[in-house]
Amino acid sequence: MTVKKKDIRALTKEQLRDFFVSQGDKAFRGNQVYEWLWQKAVHTFDDMTNVSKQTRQMLEDNFVINHIEVDNMQRSNDGTVKNAVRLHDGLIVESVLIPTETRTTACVSSQVGCSLDCKFCATARLKRMRNLNPDEIYDQVVAIDKESRLYHNRPLSNIVFMGMGEPLMNYNNVIKAIDKITSPEGLGMSPKRITLSTSGIPKMIKKMADDEVKFNLAVSLHSAIDDVRTSIMPFNETFPLADLKESLEYWYAKTKRKISYEYVVWKGVNDTKKDIDALVKFCKYVPSKVNIIEYNPIDDGDYQQASSEALDNYINTLEKHKIVVNVRRSRGKDIDAACGQLANKS
Image (tube, rainbow, N blue to C red):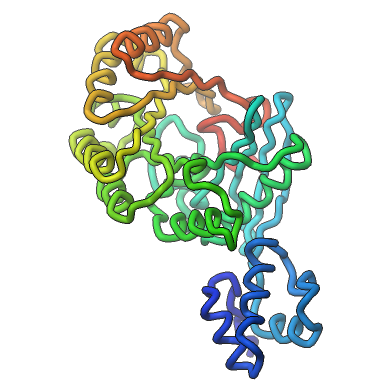
């Protein structure tokens, strides 16, 4: 009978040190191996060049490194890169490198498929197959950092959890991944450069505030009117805007950090004055800013980008009320890498 080997990256540094002691070796060997696994992000035990051949064989006999493979990489005309990432069990997720003049951002996935049912999003049509492990999230960032250095001559500067899946439905693994990404023993990135984007799960937003996380929060809002939001994002029935508002007030009271609202304007869905006024009111509850995102149609065309006049009405009204508003032009549309398009066509 073959024994299923344990994924070595599921061990803490202390557990690795204990393992070496139990094998009659020195505890510091655990530190060495831990550094190879995380800071240097190697994919095989053979790459651990300062560890003896005998020790590498012993690791090989006991463990596996369940690393990801970039199965297919597409480069857009605008410099955006989309990775189809194959996981150790053959499932695939997508992650995206988004370059601008001043920075490169990794958009990473947290689930295979998605737990939620947003009507406008291609990922939501895939059922959730499983949560990603912390190392699978971490590996996406490592792969994109390499691509950023290769194609744009600079390290990755920002990370957004806006890929496939709802990060707050995989809370523990996402938090562990962020801890590794921000740790000096991992990638050493500042948490201020990381944004977690959620569709809005009130209980988990409060938990993040209680856990005193240091990264930024973005909420995929799209409407501040309950029945409109429910028509776009049916789970809003379970987590209505009143509950979301209360959790965001709690977040701000605890963290004193501004919230970003991600907001797409669709023709005939949320493009009226009533929709704009409701958003202005919602933005006044806690200090916030609005990112208006250009919509990228998915195959059936049920949702269409609103007119530029409707967008201008949003922008002018928000600015008049002294609410910071940015318009995000979509990148990577030619390779289906833009917002809402990640659907594993690969």
